[in-house]
Length: 325
Image 1 (cartoon, rainbow, N blue to C red):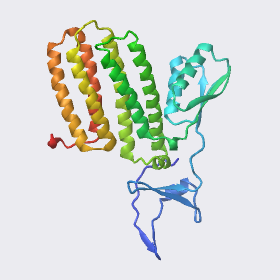
Image 2 (cartoon, helix red, strand yellow):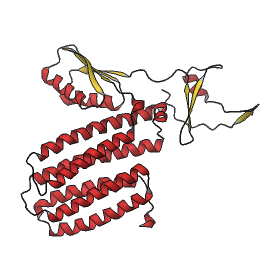
Image 3 (tube, rainbow, N blue to C red):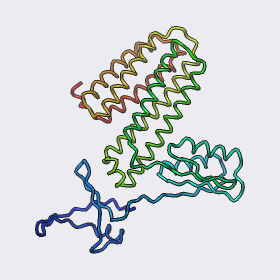
Image 4 (tube, one colour):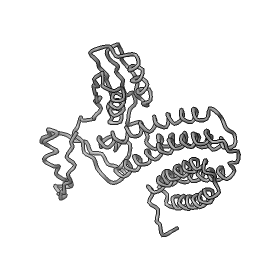
């Protein structure tokens, strides 16, 4: 991978009927190219062009070896997670001694939470996992929509529990949040891979601003899922019987979420401005509810406010014009 990110200015030259531009000397040297070699040129939707040395498809598997044991089990978990997010295709956990049963289960559990990563080899001294999906066939927008769909279902069920409490609610919601986390890890892995591999970014039709927006949005979606779990905890631990006002406030968040996601997906300023107006109305109602609320349900109100802030932060990625409000 060529890591020099310097910019170069080149003057176009006409030779015969062709327009030519010279390539940076450092890039030529790094890729061991010379006169007569072939390069591949791809054009992007943003009018950018990407040049690759011929034959460098970057489809070789990236492999990392993690040594066991670590002083803490969490260290192994963090190393495996980090390797996955950095785009390693093969992750090996090797040991000179037998891997303990408990640590083996921890390792296999964390691998099981990674979309596309499967254990392909295992014995008492090692565990090898491989990413079996083709990154070029993944769609960051679809992954984000999948996260949104799961989060939307989590929130609807949590809101319904205000009037129909389910003792198993917290466990159900937390389990679904695990799936949000799995999709989040997959999206972060894909985004990081696209940053490191311009050819992959080109295949995914992603420019730099798209990559940045998806990374920020993924984090906000993941935060929304975590906060819904907090909301479910707050509801489960509360014994109040009257939740009419709270449910009315909560329903406004559902509307805000739908508008925010539509605005982000379409990069639509009209929808983003409408979402900001919806948030303002939600915030006004929330302030009124706070004034009349018993102290013991403030945790519910606080969680709702944090969820709404996640969606309005998604809207900010569309950069609406403030003066229109």
